Image (cartoon, rainbow, N blue to C red; front, side, top):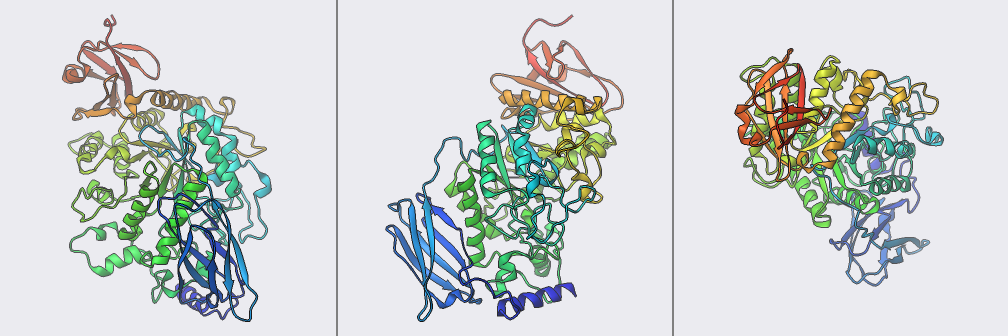
Amino acid sequence: MLMKRVLFTITLLILGVNGYAQIPALERIEPAFWWTGMQNPKLQLIVHGKNIAERTVTIAYPGVQLTQVHKVQNPNYLFVDLTIATTATPGKFLINFEKVGAKKLTYTYELKQRDTSPNRIQGVTSKDLVYLIMPDRFANGDKTNDVVKEMQETTLNRDTLITRHGGDLQGIINHLDYLQDLGVTALWINPVLENDQPKYSYHGYANTENYKIDRRFGTNELYKKLVEACHKRGMKVIKDLVHNHFGNQHWAIKDMPAADWVHEWPQFTRTSYKDQVLFDPYAAPEDKKRMTDGWFDTHMPDINQNNPFVRNYITQSHIWWIEYAGLDGFRLDTYAYNDADFMAEWGKAIKAEYPQFTFFGETWVQGVPNQVYFTQGNTVNRGFDTQLPGVTDFQTYWAIIEAMNGKFGWNDGVTKLYTTLASDYQYQDASRNVVFLDNHDLSRFYSLVNEDIAKYKSAIAWLLTTRGIPQLYYGAEVLMKNLANPDGKVREDFKGGWPGDKINKFTAAGRTAPENDVFNYVRKLANYRKQNEVLQTGKLMQYVPENGMYVYFRYNADKTVMVAMNTNEKEETLSLNRFKEQINNFTQGQNIITDELLSLKDNLKVPAKTTLILALKASKAVN
């Protein structure tokens, strides 16, 4: 019944009979400005204003050609196509909207000079360590933006799971020293575009603007300042994007350009969340349609990416943010639910404009082939190239959980971790996948191992030594815990991030002994990884697990690192003769965490529930 009311309201909005048509004669133009010297000379402006389609558009500026003006079902819109020649110079010009017998409307448009600084738009690779932040829950650096009275949600209550807590971009900026010291090289920040929804808007995944930072987080200028501050420290920033849906309070949903702007159903139809239908050779077309066109939630309309104006609007907004802020990467939310052809087209457009830029998609699926299906290269005979370099690697996530908690067997326990990585041959390049222990949607890993610190450190050791791009979730380094039941429990505040907090986990004095133990462990290993390419880009050789023991090596021309994981409840003695092709002439292994030198002569003792990380050295054996 709710969906029927929503659809009825949308229909009225298109007809302009319920008051929403009472917008200014020229309400907005997006993007509000652009740049000269872009690889793609074409630009499409979306113009919104009361009955703007009744007006004629004219432009007079050297190097800018008005190629076409599109009218759509809703007279409150025009889509204006421009071609910007390579000879166009930065500057301002008027866009005129004229109608006989009416006052002329004008908009001052600007073409800006591109910033070609060498440290901008670097891309994110396996050399990085990504730190995922939910900004509303990390730190509050500006209390003046906690509540914006003219926005729909004005509740601020840190004692609830679903309301806003006040964290913001300034809070992140204030703690960059902490993150840099930890060894972090890239920040993935959950969506920060404006979510002017009546409730449950803190997470950012129902945007109501495409070109505007949520005022409760800060401003566009402050977001750019954050990126620049990170770049000065040698750190990078990843923007979290949602292609699949908008919030139902988005201005272009409240007054839709046309009926096919979103996927409409006779009654509310939620996506099935069944990714299998996308590659199932026997799938029913109706099942495929429900998966991709069904709504993610009642307040998240599914955008129709087959509409060419939708495609341009989304793609240009993303290019705009890269150019404006100097971003280094994108994380693509709910990737599997998007139109595949559009996402491939989108990927080509991003790569053409920014060859060094990188992005990865959320593929919350079961099974390696299912995950590979979404990656670029047509590696599983999909029939076309998705243009998606990497994914959030849920398969290794399931595997490390089994490795820590499962009983060792032919297919179980740590064997699952081995066999999952053995399937990497299906990817074009598995090192572009993002590996993780938890995120904003998942139970905290510390809780998944029943708060067993030995197991937890063992999993962190794997995370920072395996192939791919490692990602830490905020607070993982200080033992933040809880199961995702509901998800708000894994999105708690980072203690010390708010003025007046009695406990400050950003400092050693504010952490307990176990928290400092894990923090120091992460810090030591993360900074070793940061300083040693062998754990970033080195080759990987793994050995079939035996008796609950899993051994692998990362190596390059300069260094070899041995990783020995004991998943058993007791100390094990590992015979080293089996690994002679990698140990070769090395006689010692230096424990990266403790700096202790261990003999590699015959055997190696590995404590229970421990992963040893040894930098191999060619020197005299230890007695």
